[in-house]
Image 1 (cartoon, rainbow, N blue to C red):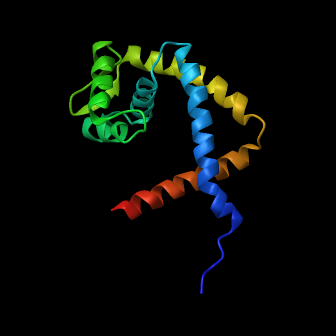
Image 2 (image 1 turned 90 degrees about the horizontal axis):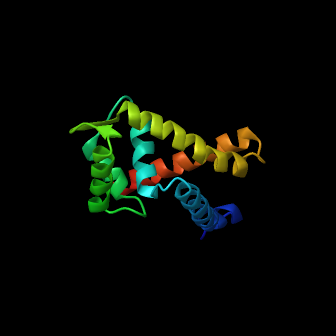
Length: 145
């Protein structure tokens, strides 16, 4: 005996994939206006969201799992940020004051596109979507182990 799959379950992965593709294209174009590579944005976002520093091993592992970076290119992105004076630290990485200012400015720039795309929705719907995606991500990671 099989259980019927709700139509929303069947559409979830496809909808998520197309949304991710479209949002990535918007992000890449928006970052290009500031001559910033997506890998740089991802690294700054992870470091800037850490409190107050992010373990380098964890940071490199998370960046290396992204669709656009490998372990080598993640390490290279961090080396560039370090050479540019935007981050510092060996075992734990944090933003320098210059890096924090750069990240704040870039985050505001990226938020313009985010606000334009999400502004049409009720904020509670967005919050529900975020909670759902975070829970699905957590469950998928747990099932990997």
